[in-house]
Length: 465
Ligand SMILES: Nc1ncnc2c1ncn2[C@@H]1O[C@H](COP(=O)(O)OP(=O)(O)OP(=O)(O)O)[C@@H](O)[C@H]1O
Ligand SMILES: [Mg+2]
Image (cartoon, rainbow, N blue to C red; front, side):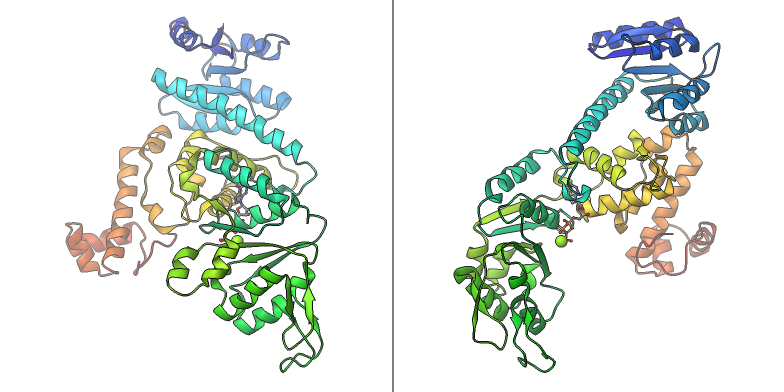
């Protein structure tokens, strides 16, 4: 049973919270003064797992309590602070000192419960990530796959099943879903792990260069081929070759690849000697290869060769449950400075991340976190630090977040107005007269608003403003 300390000088509030939280199965303690909080937190056997504390305490303010504790215990304090409505600067101070979250009074008991549950969930995730980290201590932090959602469990099972076989594997999924990462993990766990992992991006080179890149060439094979050169397949002998973006490979190169897969041998470009290789082949694509086959852009026989084992990485929007763990992972991976600890993130900001649809998938999330860490200067990432790069999401105003942070009606109205102006301009391709009439404004009013909001002349896309 999780133990929660309720610290408030108001006995009525303590009673209310006690009754409610005990019904929810928590073990509740109370404190009336800051001194009692400090002694409870530092007591050995009996310390609470979480403290729900009013900022206004009779002896010492809640902020001072946090300050004392963050000096001794570091800045990840198991505290949820209760503040009066509208005192957002206190709330921000509390977060910066390392409190987990804050709730404003008067509060809704269900919100209190939600915040508490999220805290404990968050703790569990943290432990899991730490567990993973120890488990993988010897590997590069870039080389492990995070995520516990059902679709990812399937991915792990398949990796486990195929890693030690020498079967060809095709990895599919939208951009940024982790295909290259999975290929790396597969290689590291395979019987080819002692050999190299050689990566080739089939989209990066024109047809003739790709062939010589893959298979090598003999001296004089073409103008400029001054020496014999080994190809990637030869370099990957006893290792793995990763053919990225295989959907972009030309039909003639596909034919040569098919032969390698069937016979495990090939000739260098311009050569007659056949070269034998023992190489594990992993291919990846974000295209629908079956569709490419139907449209005669991809050889059917090669497709069946590659498609023996397929690992499909679902888009991030279909596994939003993985987001907290991924965020935690990226906060550890992207520190503000080499010496700083991982930044933290408010529940409100986390919620924004879980409400987004992630067209750029995990890569987009990783980039966003990296950016947010910088904006928050490595401390606490709040809603203000979250900027989605895909254009349309700028259309989004999170009302709950605004109210929580104490934004006024006028501020939110202005924010919405600005978004509407930009969107209207976008929809009519920058035609101001048309945009004004779309919004029911006369052109004079419309122009004035553009000036007021500093919206530039032409808005064809929702570039950062
Ligand atoms: N499940 C995951 N856990 C941890 N990091 C991940 C995960 N999935 C992706 N990443 C990270 O996201 C970034 C993008 O992943 P990756 O390059 O593997 O995507 P991809 O599917 O190959 O994308 P593309 O199709 O655009 O090449 C990398 O930095 C990778 O480490
Ligand atoms: Mg890739």
